[in-house]
Amino acid sequence: MPDEPLTGPERDTDDGSRFTSERIRSALPWWAVSNTSDVAKVVAITATAGPRQVITRPILVINQHAAGELAPRRLARVNFLEAALPHRLGGSFRALIAASSLNQFGDGMLLAAGPLLLASLTRDPFLIALAPVLQRLPILLLGLGVGAYIDRVNRQRLVIIVDLTRAAVLMCMGALVATGTMTIGLVLALISLLGVAEAFADVAGQTLLPSTVPAEHIGVAQPRMMATYVGGNQLFGPPVGAFLFAVGAAWPFVANAVCFAAGAALISRMTVRHVTEETRSSAALRHDVVEGLRWLAGNGPVRTLVLTVTLFNITYGATASVTVVWASQRLGLDEVGFGLLTSAGAVGGVVAILTFGAVTRRVSYATLMRAALVTETLVHMTCALTTTPLVAYVAMFAFGVEAFLWGTTSMTVRQALTPHHLLGRVGSVTMMGVYLGLVVGGMLGGVIARQFGITAVYWCAVAGNFPLLVVIWRQLGHLAQAGEPHRDDSDER
Image 1: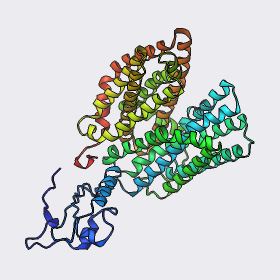
Image 2 (image 1 turned 60 degrees about the vertical axis):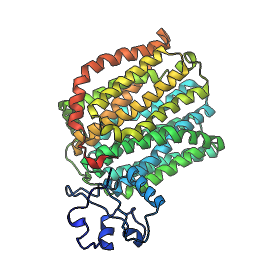
Image 3 (image 1 turned 90 degrees about the vertical axis):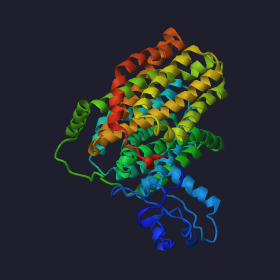
Image 4 (image 1 turned 120 degrees about the vertical axis):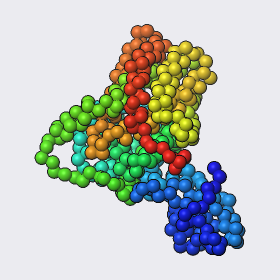
């Protein structure tokens, strides 16, 4: 985009005089200059659309009379930082996304190291399968109460406490593994504790973004938060966790503990607006739960979104439960080939991250949400039909793109439509829907595969998704329109 002419008090005066160094430095973000000489080479034009508006588009202008040009490397570094972490999102958001990156990376390591540890302690498939159930069970059993409690307390403080608790549990796991005293019973017990902590951390953590970033910029911030999940949890964390486990079985758990502790330290540095202070409400916790459910039942757009998330996770959970068998029987893939399927999905997520800004400048959230669900249905159909690995890799790539687009748009819309004091309760119900769908879908997938074969699972997913799409097609348009964040020229990244 060509530089815009300087107007107003920021333009040069008629006699050719320039800004003073003090005026220029005060207009620039902290990372734009590193010494006084650079100040004389850069002018930032600040749009002031409201009291929350900060620098939205730094325009770099080389002073014709300066001793030299701004170093190309420094300029590239400035542009990269602004593209990755726009200054208008604020310093607290930088702390939040750094903490999220560490936590997601740690969770990714645990995704690989956890099953490896279980397999080293027992060959009983029931006990190995029991671990993820125990990890997900707390949010299903405690979700409503967790959400109501989160809406009563200081959410930032709660996230810090829970992250430090998770760090302590993981450090204990590492110590037990290192000393050779770990047993399968202890692993399952510690995983259950992690599940309880995660129930609080995941729901409370989701409330920090709308408490940190102005509402008009949530659409810019949310995809960056989702990027930490794709990069840390799916792409980089698992292989690092597996490598560390091979080096020493205790190391991935110790490293995960360090990630959570560092994440808690970063969260403590945030300035969170509108944090709900701890109160001694005379009303019972059950009253808060009922209040949240009533609001959700009476809010058509958010209710539709929660139901959609739950039902589509049933069909996804069914197919995910048999993916490894499908890859082996239908595609003839070995362990490496199956790993490449997962990698293809992660690569799709990365591509979605890199193109999200450009796509949302041209395509509405309603279109994106509809396209995502249609793509998921077509991926299930492709998996039912194909026996060719290359086609399967393409399908998993498309699913990775779809998962990022749906996850980002749906969470952005939900947070935009939910009152701040209900974020915990609505978030917990949504997460309960996700896990309930995965658990129910996983059980259905196993039963269908045993009775009718692997491909029947994918055809059932198609048959389940198609009528849902027909029913919610129009509602998705109203939902996205109600919750889509305002877009302006500052949201170009």
